[in-house]
Picture: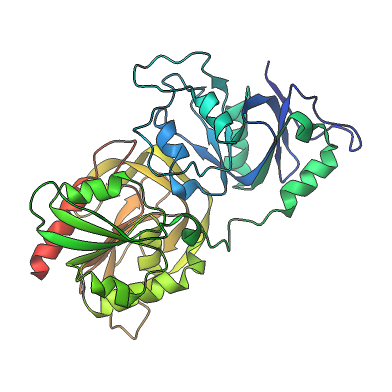
Length: 393
């Protein structure tokens, strides 16, 4: 059974019984369904993900911290989950929304069902939701706060649930990278001889990213988000890497100042996702919150360097505000960072998808070239980074 309703329930009456779950948006829209995973309360920003596969990697991507993920693909969970495909040590999503949850697992790699894992980890979800209508609503009204309530939590009056949703902090202004970053530095070594050494600042890094770097002969020193320039310099890096991560880039003043030191020293730099936004800020450009973000493994991007269109894996709700039709001088530092061009753009909405410094060895992209899960169109960017470090040598 699938029920979809505006928030028409009487304010002093429960919106569901213990066999029902409800999804409440901050604008008062309510969707009803059934519990999936753990029961209780989940609060977070509502975001929809357009990928048809890769849900395990989505659940373990730290960039989804404090967000409730809505899967637009109608059937989720048929391959279950395993112990090999996690992209981090934690399941970071705040809650989970699906339309049709698989009733049985059909993969030899699975160690348990998705519902069992969500339940075991205490992640509150809801199934039998009209996710198409929900996604269209978010595309029309924009990203907003949301709550999922099930079992006893769903028995409370509708007005009380809505008040709890509206009381949570918004994503704009949230400083989250330090919450998901490693607390201790560690090293990922290549199988063969190390040709380069890179200091990778973990702002919410996915496990496949150090692997992609190591495959290219890079010894990767993963550092916490709180790392200082002195700690980065102690690695004696041939290059510096900033990872993806959650939160508002306007709150990341520490990392922006660190990156400016890297640029001042002309150390080759590569950033992805959150790292792209921080390069934009370090150069003096602004950032802003997108209406509903880009999330999924099917986002089309034009690489202006090659003229090729790439299908990319993305997960971001903020973007860089930089001129897309002309080379500009970096606003920060009285021109000391030189000329900058927008190297990649989104073919859906012309959002900045990459930056390239023309007078410094630095570039970044807004998407995830490690693509776990996702297409491999953009993995050449790791090779572009090694080329930049070789030129520095």
